[in-house]
Image 1 (tube, rainbow, N blue to C red):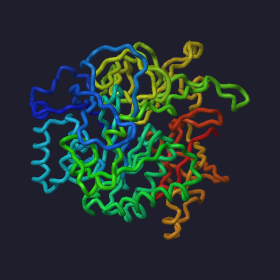
Image 2 (tube, rainbow, N blue to C red; image 1 turned 180 degrees about the vertical axis):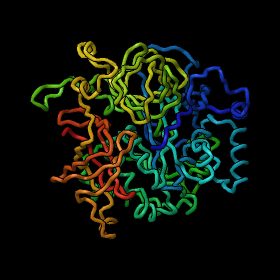
Image 3 (tube, one colour; image 1 turned 45 degrees about the vertical axis):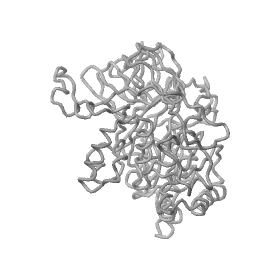
Image 4 (cartoon, one colour; image 1 turned 60 degrees about the horizontal axis):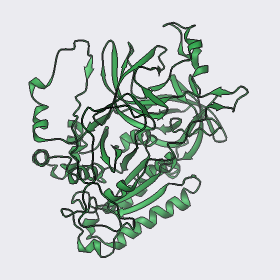
Length: 530
């Protein structure tokens, strides 16, 4: 799976050039096997926005972006926060939209933008300058597409907001699925100039299904490039009606109560992203749209109540009641690894991460101890999920991978009987609802691409066929063993850590999987106990 890049804002001219200064790098730590360069800068404090309750677009709106003092040590275990992943068909303008938002908020300096515009024009991609704020690796810039998942965070209305830009190309769509399952809100960017091809033959429908199955609080459809049709209201209305009808009719079997929002934008020209004196409405748009801007919508979002539902203490779905692990998190990126510690960005789904406390990184049996927690340039002693962690450092002698699950430590009773050679599978009774096995049982939640598969006479649900299983940022080849009703039984190429969904009220998305057959997503399901 592609790695997730965590970044913080703002970038200044000096910061950009310092990254290429030979004195910027240090060779003091010979134990470091590899380490990613991290740019950590502070967002300037700006006046707080009071969002219009009637959702009327404002022409002169202050920017409500705030941050606390850098490196301030905070022991508050709960942070008001939410995340928002940005999806969209390739070339829909996802990265440009979020890049322009950060520029409009003053989080990216004018000097850096001038440099991006100049360098993008040199390689014949001048319109991609805003996208380079999120697409910052050479391969992405040369190809003009998002490959890796890029994360940036900022403070809006005293809330920590994490924006995740996901790939749109079909080659990388499993990355979009994985990160969608960890998000509180989703923005789906629609290319109005190529809507039919993106909707019928592209990834738009698949992104909509991801959004509904992730059960996020808000699904925001940003209808982009309307400036190319002179802000034609009929074009916008047709897109809104097509998507709404598809959700209400074709996807009616997906139970979902997400708030669905539509808004017209121009990502490149910055229209309806932030409506202040520098970003005014064209009269062709203001004549028929008086709704909120993208920033007003983001400002009005509160922390997801769905993600804050307490996990049950015990599960009674089996003959014997089982106690849930009190903490679960997923590694999104390995920042650095040495012989004695590793540093990673995490998504905490449940429980508390605490400095000095021990945890388990599955499938390793050795315990690890949390050494430091950093979120948006602040150091914390404890932190409660659900939340994205910019950087967490653990003392250990293991080498974890992206997608590894971190859980609360084994009970002391079991700890006294184990040693470094004890297989983790013998300790799973204390790690409910997790299994480690080559056998995987998947309950289908939604079949995908049925018309495409039928048109090509592809019969995929036949025992013996080979598949790729994508689960919490990991992937594994698998063979289909059998199918019973909506239950699919697979055997994976390697032992995998399956985070299972049981029948009780355990509100988790770590169990969700994407099953692909020769590059085509055939179903979205959830892992259940076998």
